Image (cartoon, rainbow, N blue to C red; front, side, top):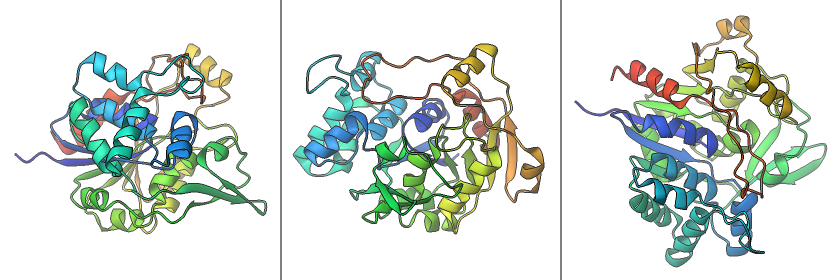
Length: 328
């Protein structure tokens, strides 16, 4: 029996969670990864070496890795000190070094994938060097790292990539051959938008015969999506992927524990609301699923260059749903 082809589109953290569990299924798995990251270790390497952003790619490689725990830990290791190295990830430096040697980022990803013995394929959404741009209030904010700390003034912000970024032909082929496309959860206007706004992405998603599933976010992002409900996220995803549309939206219907709720409140990231009437009227199928992880994660103390979110999906629950949907 032919293994189904499953494509996951997203950034680093959300894709990592899904890929870590999906790789256990009997599927051909491909991750298509956003290439607009320019903050933290990744941003420094982009600016100083002129390389494409390695950070989100590295996370997806580690998620799919079947290598030893020591090797996976090496690729996620962050230097705790050093004026130039503090906060940098070894994996980011490795990918940047191989790209500098080969002048080919996709070759660097393949080399790292071979070393990490990944179960699947990791593809950059684009091979063009571009930045995310937000236009609002008569100004342009250029760069993902600046946009994530900027208050979004409108519900449908004007976002674009500059210069124009074209869809990686290998990513287009993977979407064309897919039996299921999953858009991972992630920072809506920081990670997902730049992956989905790549020129040609919307048309590729429209042309594929595969259902397109969005796994909705768990928490709203301060400055960006306060007060958003599940259907608001889905509407923005559909705006980004036009002329394509979503087939299904999988959303969490499991309430957080009291400890998790305190984590939400402390991070000013309140749970995404479920407005059932709006979901019932949507053209896509809304799928409720208990998919909230109950692990309370902590930031790596050496990860000093950016602040991260630690409310996560239960990747195993998403994988179980995927297996059931594909009748594996």
